[in-house]
Amino acid sequence: MKLDPRAMVKAAVGYVRKNPDEVVRAAVNATGLRFGVPLASLRWLASQVQGSGKKAPKDVEIASVPPALKLSATVDAMGTPIRATASIKIDEVTIAPDTLRIGVRLRDVKLQVTDDNAESPVATLIKSGALDLSKPGNLVKFIPKKPPMIVESDGDRIVLDLMKIPKLAGDPRVKKILGILSPVLGIRSIETDKDHLYVKLRASPAGLPEAIAKVKDIVTNGAR
Image 1 (cartoon, rainbow, N blue to C red):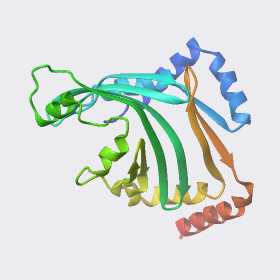
Image 2: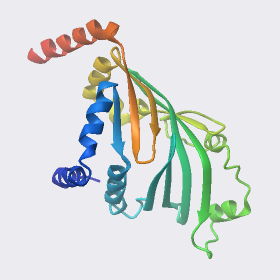
Image 3: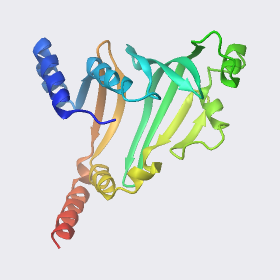
């Protein structure tokens, strides 16, 4: 899926015009290294994803249950249409030159088969109620051939390392950016209020010399 930059700009301008207080809110939050993403913008992005292909999630709904984010969507699970709902809380973000680790807690997970006539193994398993949806991490643990980016799963928690995704791991630009950011910048928390998703940053001035040295190295090697 490719997003149209002009459509994104148009949507952003339209949102700010309807909500001019967002500019002041953003400025105030920035002074405390706190940045908010309106849930309306996430809903707009979800609306673009929904039309991107047959396998894309449908009827995506995004809401907040502070401090978590609540997501609902209809997905295709091996040919079986399922309505999935969960509250998602990110409780860890670790940035390092070779790591982009994200810890996610999944709670209030619900799965509902939307086709009453579905008789697939997936449909039978969900309808039987045999799945312990209170501990989705335990279910993920036993999935054969898990994606390599899933590095831990236990209870209601799943840990992803995005640098295990081959396209990211093989992109030197991503490693350079992480190498520059990791000494000076971290993410303290990610949480929601009624209308926003907030990212709270942690600055580490002591790591500034290391970051500057890496920038200089990139510039020097790039000039050769």
